[in-house]
Amino acid sequence: MVGARRNVPLQPTCAMCIELFQLRNKVAIVTGASRGLGKSMAMALAEVGANLVLVGRDKERLEGAAREIADFGVKTLPVIADVTMAEGVEAVVSRTLEEFGKIDVLVNNVGTYLGKPIVESTLEDWHNLINTNLTSTYLCSRAVGRHMVERQRGKVINMAAALGALGANNASAYCASKGGVIQLTRALAVEWARYNINVNAIAPGTMETELTKAMLEDPAVRKAVTGKIPMKRTGQPGDLAGVVIFLASQASDYITGQTIFVDGGFSIL
Ligand SMILES: NC(=O)c1ccc[n+]([C@@H]2O[C@H](COP(=O)([O-])OP(=O)(O)OC[C@H]3O[C@@H](n4cnc5c(N)ncnc54)[C@H](OP(=O)(O)O)[C@@H]3O)[C@@H](O)[C@H]2O)c1
Image 1: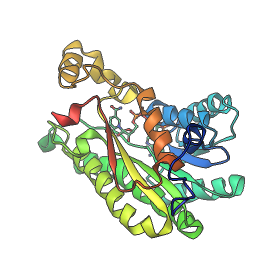
Image 2 (image 1 turned 135 degrees about the horizontal axis):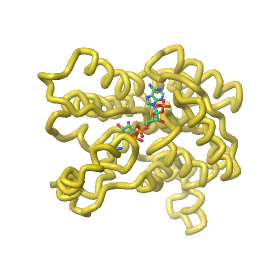
Image 3 (image 1 turned 90 degrees about the vertical axis):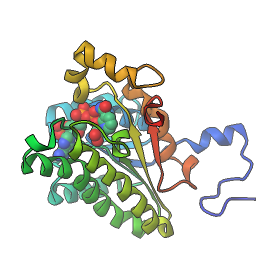
């Protein structure tokens, strides 16, 4: 007997279970892949066989990441683009289709953070956060979605944040933008379920990347942050490897519209 959607056996054997997580010959676009969580997720996808299109603005860093990831024996294509701009995003999609002819997975990872009381913030601060975190996700999903809808298959993985579902001090634009990502995930999941496209989100807690480096260098802040995490440690980029492979692979075929919190329990308190 087979499952209705992608021939998933109802009672898989162990070998089949491992096969469920393979991404051989798949093509994945990861935005913001030159460093941090994006680079780490791209590496994880490469380890299970996916060819990678890496997107970022800093040419040198992006090409360096592409060389490292190619060591896994997959093809990599670095594309320089600002994903807050529609033209940049369209160029990423056309370069990918020229090179690989298809897109199986889109990881909308680009994002940034701003810690500022709202009364001290400017309209420019607000627009920058919303454009980088939410509009980029809209633009990439729209452009890649046209191709996935036509193919009637695909996996979209959006980078939310635990703070997209919680309140936090001096983080109103960030919380609003990531809350928007969670809602965009749910709405697109409904819109695209009929096309066999899964749309899910990952919501990390505090992870050790360049984005959080300065903040976590202050021992008092680090202590306060880890004190609020039941597992008593911040996350490492590698902590997202399992979840991104799961959401990109056949193993998650019957899951859509969900946000998976990867935060050491931070969001459950
Ligand atoms: N770190 C955390 O604790 C944490 C927690 C929750 C959620 N997140 C989310 O996870 C994602 C990744 O975070 P991170 O910590 O890895 O951040 P990061 O270290 O600052 O990396 C951001 C990446 O995005 C790229 N980028 C930024 N703006 C871009 C744009 N407009 N167009 C194209 N590329 C762009 C950067 O490269 P270039 O500058 O070269 O373009 C870089 O590769 C973000 O969405 C963030 O909000 C992070």
